[in-house]
Image (cartoon, rainbow, N blue to C red; front, side, top):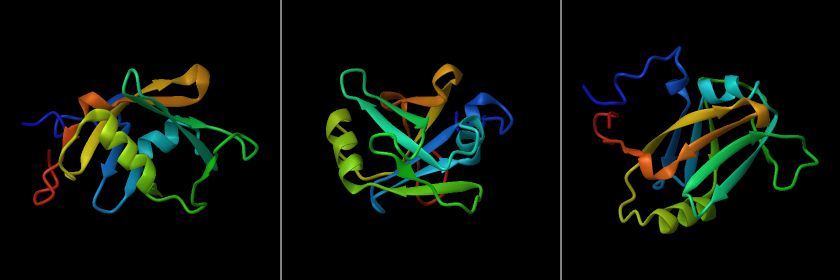
Length: 129
């Protein structure tokens, strides 16, 4: 059984961020939205040195706030061609295969952090890593 299949939807490990390079989109799952307390907008922060990405709940006045759709579903899609290209270059990934990152909550900053180097390649055919 893969690491992805062992995830318990009720656990903190259900903070899943999908990076889809072919569609130039990032998908935030319901666990992330719940952890961030259903934000109207988020900041996407990248640390190139540690190869980390953080999503932080923020106000519209915040620098580079990304507005999320008002209608909630099981996941929210955020477009970001230049951000995904930057991530791909930073990590040295050579393929466009989708990847899933498991998040760690940082409640004191209303954020979820993702170690990009630990991303799991998703098999697009079976939808399993």
